[in-house]
Amino acid sequence: MIDSPSDYISHLITMIRAFSDPWGLKTPDSRHIYMNDEARRFTSTPQKFYLEGRRDSEFPASWAELEDDLIAHDHQTCGSSKSSLVIETHHWYGDEDLHPYLSEKFPIFDNTGKCVAILWNARPVMSVNPMMLINRKNRGSSARR
Image (cartoon, helix red, strand yellow):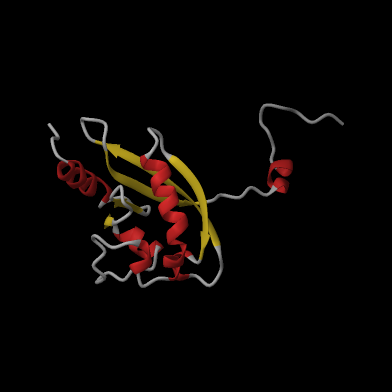
């Protein structure tokens, strides 16, 4: 049985450590707890940078300037019983080009219903070219001439 916030967090860290997508954990007051290796690459956070307890603005990365928006997203998540999803456009992975990513955050509650952590992930926004849809053959229909 999970009894304390640290129990929840240690179980979540064990789970997300092996994920191949960017995943991380923050406290309800927007301090970082953990990022898996892919999240560190995604955010261009150096491996040797100690992130535990740090705010977004303290990171040695250009996205640190987005702190106000990231905190607002954290607070929206902790104040809800559902996940929240936003599109974050930045120079992810240190790329020179801007790339949109879907960032979803999940509130983690203890047995009393108190938000004890925020679990987040990021995945690329998949764009659909309308020409791909027009030119695609649909097996369920036939063309008439």
